[in-house]
Length: 219
Image 1 (cartoon, rainbow, N blue to C red):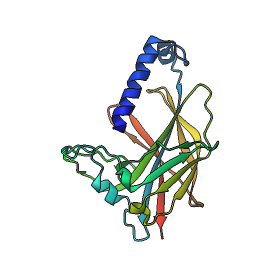
Image 2: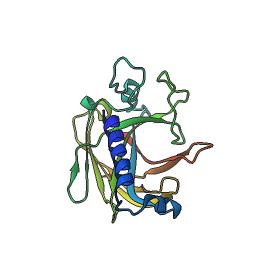
Image 3: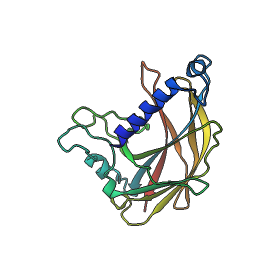
Image 4: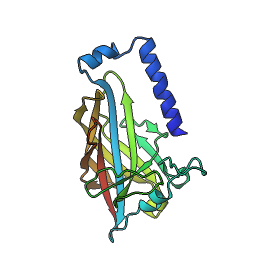
């Protein structure tokens, strides 16, 4: 349902851009002049393992969350009954609509594609994935963004764990005319973690998937 709602919103935005004046100016002019649309994406991927190296996100990844039990196509979302997620902005605003999706990545943090039967050819680690997006004319880096997570299936307790992240503009996507931010610093429950910046480039296309990974090891 989230995917359908997101697609509907994007469709309405596209119609609005075509039929009325845009706060960003003429869309064709933006494209011709290669002027980025002010849209900020913050992509965070969370890997969690224990000291023995066991992938603690794997049980959720292998379960998937199926919106249609009769379908072999999985939505990629985490079962909402198994976690709570809030993203808190610096001004105290709490985004309670945030949610996790799932992805599998190889040792180089490259996205591993799913086959039609819901399996993978390549071994790798599962990630809890969440993105936050802001659209506006005078955007500022939102520092810090705080992720409040409760997920007994991964962390083994009912504690609300906090991941605090700091972001900087790292690149422009010239194809999409969008600005992307990268995570330059993060803490998990007060302990600093070094984010890993990764980019999966799809051969023969202009598409690249850039994200920031946090590798969390639980004692």
